[in-house]
Structures are given as structure tokens and as C-alpha cells.
Amino acid sequence: MTEGADAPSEAAGSAAAAGVPSRAAASPYSTGGGGVTLERRVAARYLAILLTGEGAPELGDERAIVSVAFQQAPQAPVDDLVILAARPGEMDPSLELAVGVRRAPNIVPSAAATQKLVVEYVRALLAAPADGREHRPALVVAGSHGHTVEVAELAGLASNQMDSQGFFTLIQTPGKFRQALVPCWNTRLSG
Image (cartoon, rainbow, N blue to C red; front, side, top):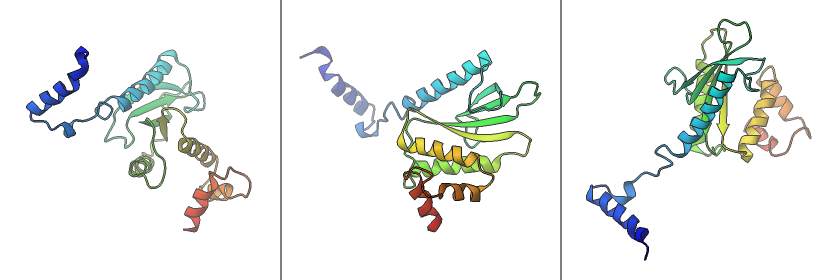
């Protein structure tokens, strides 16, 4: 028998001795492991862009980052990171990018976490002040997931439309888009 073989039982015994039931213990991921690590990596990327003066596609229009803020609630409903960016020669930032960081969101209508996330994005858009600054929400995920790829594709299509009717007309054009994108919208519109 190896020396560390009974370590889990010792840990459980010390937890029980401390009055903590073994089922009440939280996982390392939920207490700051997984999500926080990804958020820090994303923040480090934006801080590196800030320090080097490089641009990023999500900033658009040759904007450069002028500030990176963490956890800005209650000022920003989506508050993992709030990035301010300005074009060359602008005195005040012309873009506020509210970044939500999620490792692997399950982006389907039945997922409660997804519903909450979408509500937060809508709140962020509705609460955006009329300060002359463009306010954009962003979602960063770890890796490529089927649903997040579809959401990115739909968001790209929507951003190029003048209004929601233009988007719905575009997405319903027969044979224009992958079938994976179309049924969801057709069902929602007819229901």
C-alpha cells in the first residue's frame, strides 16, 4: 500500500471532525478554479493589447484599448471585463465592450444559465447610457462549441442589418443559410 492511499479518508475525517458533512464540500472548479482561470487569461490578453497598442477585431475601426476594468457591477450588468477603446485622436473612448466570460455555455432555450446570460446582455443593452459611446456586449468561451459558433454567426448577420425585421427576413431566405441556423428562428417567429 502506498503512503498517500488513505489520504482521501483522512481528508474526509478531518472535514467531518470540523463539522462539515462530506457532501457539503464545494468543487475546486466552482470555488474559483475553472471560470476564474479563463477570465484571467482573457483579461491578460486584453491587458497585453493595451500595453502593446495593438488592435483587436472586436474593437473595430482601428480602435485601441485605453482601459480594462474587472467586475464593474452594478454599473455594468455584464461585468466580467469592461473594455474602453478609442480611435486615434479621440479624447474620450468611443466604445465600451462589456465582456462575459463563460467556459462552455449551453446555449439552448431550456438552459436556465443561458436564459440568465441572455437577460443580462439585454439589460446591458437597455441600460446603456446615451453618452455618444458605442456599447457592445461580447461573450468569450473556451474553445469552439457548436451553439456558440451558431450564435456568433447569427450575431454577425444581425449586426449588418438595419433593424430586426431585416434580420428575420434575411435569416428566412430559403437556401441562404445552414439549416442548423434556420429552424430555431422559424419556430420562434411562427410561435
